[in-house]
Length: 339
Image (cartoon, rainbow, N blue to C red; front, side, top):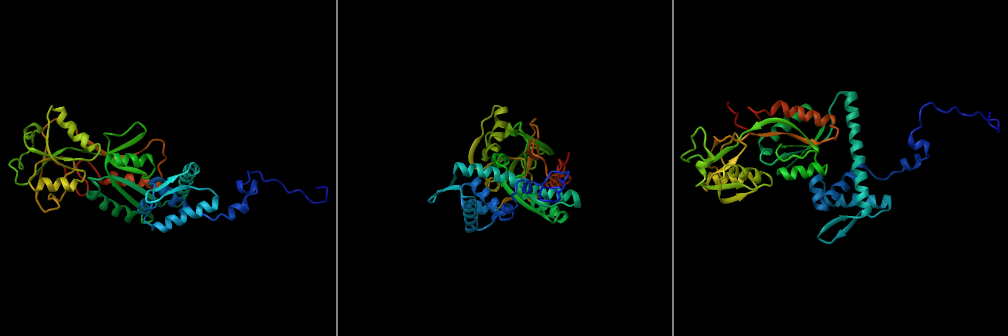
């Protein structure tokens, strides 16, 4: 009995929810921000600009600006310093708020996994990075078949060089990257999918286009077109270095299709690891892919993720889907490898 004659309420045996224990229910109920606004703020914080953020999340720049303004009013802090025509830079408070926002969004994403485990479904957002050379070859087909199987997944794709994909992994802008294993660091996990040999790319009317294989040294006097992407550039040039050769570089481009068009037009030869079903350049010139006869080890193509980052149900489902379609002997958009 209480002194006033009332009856004391029995305490529950289980811990009370945090908002009840600390009397914060009114604040929780009155929250005037959304996870979507946090996602827009994170995009702006990571890209350093409203325009780039709008391109990433595919929403208008005014919506990004309005979300940031609402968050600043709601929490009473300045998140960004606005630079005229130069984008945004995070304030010290904004940097701390960015870290907390990303953690909250990760926890919210985990609710999808929780629900998926209960309902045995796969939902949620999946942002995949793909090496630029392979993205147009197999991602459309893989994406379509994956979404047919899991229609509730919000699937997003970023294409880029190997270095760009690694940077996006570190920044948590993508969940995984389909790329090569060559330049990964010790804080990444790599699941191999296929072994990819390197080919000599030639115009179809080249004298050696019908050869079964070609030694790199036999091409050294001919003009070379370099695929000038970070890390890819270093890899292909290292092949010449291993044989103590110096290529005669007459043109270079970071875009695979530009290199293919140069070769198709007869400017020279190149080295490629992809072998598309469509063996013609964008300008309609036919191409030939001839295997290298040298003892270069094939590159390993697979899925890279950050070590220690728990895979969500949707990311595991996509990795399994890729494993069923991407193999050494066959993958969408590529000429099958005959052994």
